[in-house]
Amino acid sequence: MHESTLPEWTLDCPYCDATIEVLVDTSQGSHETWEDCSQCCAPIHFRIEVDPVTEGILSVVAGDDDEVI
Image (cartoon, rainbow, N blue to C red; front, side, top):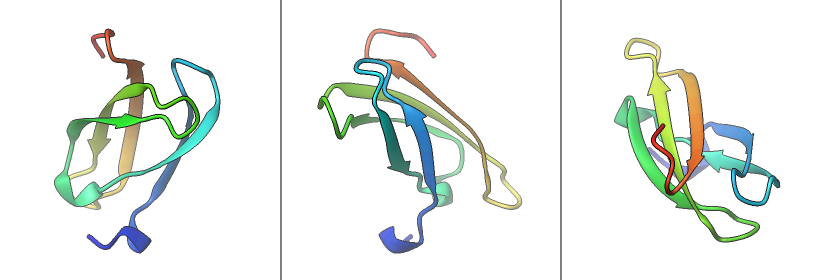
């Protein structure tokens, strides 16, 4: 999926509490990934739930690197 077509999801960083936007690749289906915060550079663990039919985002859960989400 081309980066310019990826949907954005807004959330608060679990480390610095800054509001950040992340691009979500829904073509991967539901998945887990890690991405660094654009403000504090800490590694954020994401669990992304995607509707298998519409490829729409159902939920994005973010936790610090030590949390089990």
